Image (cartoon, rainbow over all chains, first blue to last red; front, side, top):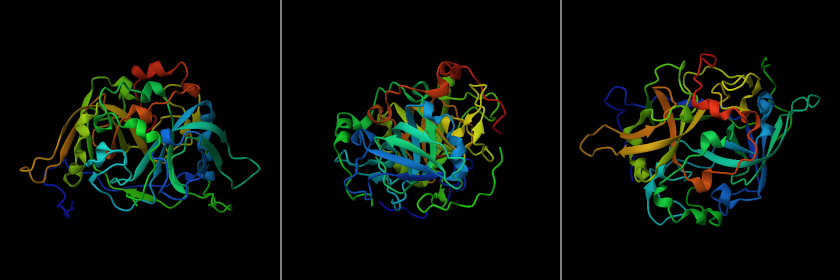
Length: 185
Length: 185
């Protein structure tokens, strides 16, 4: 599939807005130094511990986070280069549109994981220059990944009765054992 | 709360990585032209219809998305200026760390909504220059919002038994009726 340098739309109101830039709030630390062999979802990483080193200037934003059992972590998939609009995901033998998959090689390489929160270390007042630490479990994220946001997981907001899961039907259980290979390098 | 121009860390491995830039894949259209009076979560926007106009160069990525009943939409909260590390959210009378809230005035203003998928229009082959359209329900997002990513909602990955929801306990039901005011402008 090729991507022509398409003229940016003739219909007013249909084009996307300009680029947006984000500054990572911290860095994720995990046992996974390399993509190959990693779990592809938190369900395949049960018990795996990791943590987010939150930069000092953002650490005050962690107040009261320790009251939650789970968090949504958004992160930049920093080892992904470029994107594909049609991909063959780890769990299938057919190609699907990237937005119908959770594959990392997305136009905007933002990863999302719902992780168990083990504990939060707020920045020590005496330890000037050190940030906060968010300890997590079920971590399916590469070591060194820039973290963009942490949100509390609230089932009343985030859990919906999903009647249809498309091509994932019959395949989701495999995510517990499936490991990543190098296809999305 | 003030934000000193903090020296960027003395401990190696603790600092966040450099800035990341994303190009919106499309624009969200909704009945909400203004922040004030908007629902604060999809549970407060039941039945509200909206759609994403996906830019032509990304529309091929929508293939097979129509098999899903719900999607996760990530978007740039483009009307938010700056951030606060401690905020008083709509649902509480106490301040909390921004990462313990779903408030929009975040260091990286990325919004997340799990929305019902009504239908997908793929880009028409004859209609050169037009992109795809993703029709949604329960839309709690401002008209004109740049969309960063669409992911299929997969309960086996995204639903977790959350034992603790921190300060939200006893308050989540109010999200169904609570409307936004101008505090996060």
